[in-house]
Image (cartoon, rainbow over all chains, first blue to last red; front, side, top):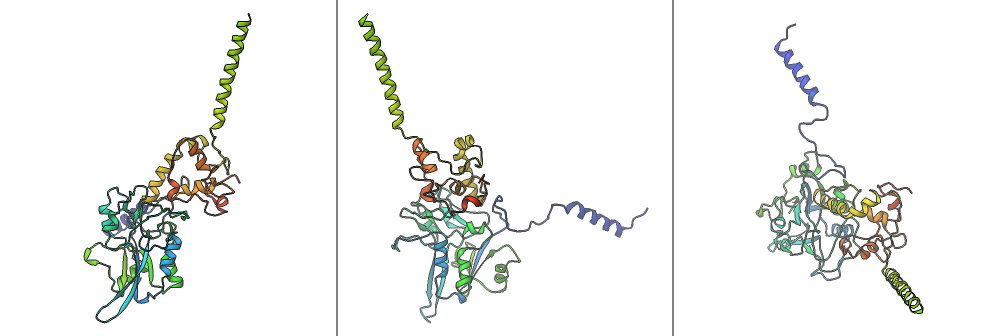
Length: 240
Length: 134
């Protein structure tokens, strides 16, 4: 039996394909993970906020504080704040905008750099968190964060949510609703904005080329707050 | 003879009195109330849980916070959902599952300064993934 070159190559390719096919992928696909799986570097969770659609409501703020059991004592100076609306006004033209501002989930977070105990950390999928078990409440991260996103809990907390432990003497900030993300849901602010707000927020995997957030970022200009710091934020804004 | 009898009587009485004192003292120490709401279907055998529950919780704690590992088996939320008192819905309080033992053993835990000691919902028990006999 004689083989010509073309036939040899065809058979070879088919054999290689058959050997690789069962249970092996050359490029891992990003997909929802089970509770037993660890967060993966293949994903990077992010938010896109379209300021032009952002109305004057505070639906995202109240949804966040409701979901995470963040309640104040009527003392705005010291009460914890995970997300807030910021008003911008061009002094010359008087053009005003308002935008929600929370932890920007930086790829190079300054809060992680300064933490003396390793309590402030970035999870593999890009979510920046505080491990309150090792937080000593020094508040270096509060000072380091250029977005003012972190709060210190000054007073004894009661009535916490089962998924969101909070306690006096630790620092906290937006967790991108990590407990919901781990269940495959979107953060509370995004859900509320799309239900009752201006549909200005999109949540998704910045690495997933098929995700809506990726498509929107690809097709229109967007910006990072304080892009000059080169922190590569996970929260992006359009229309800013 | 009388003297010997009196000595024996005195000895017996003092020993009895001593034993009685010890019993009283034992009664004065409040024993823990181990009220197990959901009997024989914990996530590990009882002996193992008594000895090692703190280790299980500590290990799962770090994996959950840092890696997003959320299996219910050794999660604190799962403990609370099963073991919270039926009336108060809490693992704290005088007869609370966690609090009564820890106060007996003089162990001060601070889990519940941040974590809620309350069962999440009234139906959490029946939907608990640990699998109960109920």
